[in-house]
Image 1 (cartoon, one colour):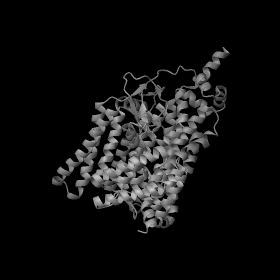
Image 2 (image 1 turned 180 degrees about the vertical axis):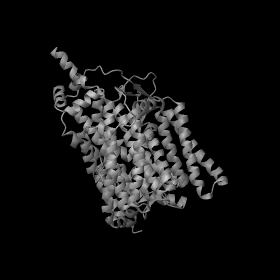
Image 3 (image 1 turned 30 degrees about the horizontal axis):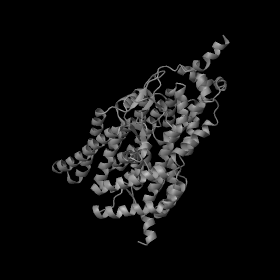
Image 4 (image 1 turned 45 degrees about the horizontal axis):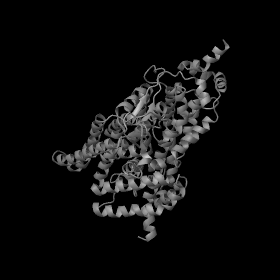
Length: 144
Length: 451
């Protein structure tokens, strides 16, 4: 599954994984309460207001729309209220040797080079993307 | 004319909304597409506009689901799962941006192939439409057995068909007595959010909590982008090599005719087919990724259009899941008797409004994901907490079920979500099986007891 490296959390709080991401239980309860309250609240507000201003057969639909607006406001409020419980590492530079990765994945870099050399279209594409050297530079180094 | 304008506006809204939703990793298609499509239907949008909205939504979502998949190694949704292996390889060698561009370009080609082809096939199949409609109850029951047999929880799924049907009918009886009419949205919203609710319930139970407890935050790695795109609207045929374009076109062509197979299964099958014929890991990964994302688009479109145009009853995994609201959104759309897009739109309208949907989505989601993928994912990961996302969906589901049936509706939804979610999680009873049982339950129980 997902490659999720673990780092030690600074705080000794335990997280819960909900649909693939970590959350804090009490924050989740708060956000759900806010969201349900605002969604249903706006819906009922609509049912109270719209009969006075809109045609009768549209009251339900308009109220629903207002309720959805409530859900979106809840998203905004909740997003501002808490910080995400995930860490993002923007690892700089791919200095890791390609060959180490290939060895790691039990792939043969020589085979890969051969397949690239034999296919001018891919070779051209790799040069365009500026990644061609990554595959071939150390080979030249070795020759030198 | 005004229908056309509404369709264009709704397609625009769908494209923007689902381009953003696609960025959220793990956003399940059914849980998201069903409630949002329902809102559009219930607000009274004309059928053609609903269709344009749905098409734009599907295409945008499946273009941007490639972003978390390629850049972070987290599947954007279930159909993105088969792409992880190759995406992870590309990420490790520091070229996630290339993987992403290949995927997105494959996706857009797949969509444009699938729409006309699946429509043609559907028109051909529609001569059998009456037969399917008259025997819908038996067909759903047979399909529940068949899908159950091929799901992870094979025998458990089959053994539970009658008990689950009994539960659906029991809930229907109680809720229809309270509300005064039969509920339907509340039922399938419950099925759709089952997996999400089971996570929440497990977290709240002392005995199940260890299953979902994590001591540390999840950590995501995002490799730096090597080179930004020049120009705003890249040509997908230039991003792919000629061989890759051919592979995408061929597999999209084949998958446009399948409407009963699981999209995830088709995606991995077609990816494997292309990957196994390609030498060299870089080429294998990029070709497979382009193909697979093309197939996620084409199967989704075909599995929506074929049952919708040919039969009017939801007879495919996608029709039973993400596209459910196009078939059933009472009181506006119903599939028993058939009164939905099937009879409200002509094949030509399907083509025209489908094209409006996918063209608009292409103009928004495609350049967006090619140009701003990385910036956008950093923003979501850094600023939007998962709690807010989960809470928003719970809020929307409560709202919709309450809208349909008041407190009884909401209770029905959460009863089904709790039971369905647990059955899915612990016994491997597929969401598709639950949907099939729901649609077949009235026939099963009334036949069994001679009602």
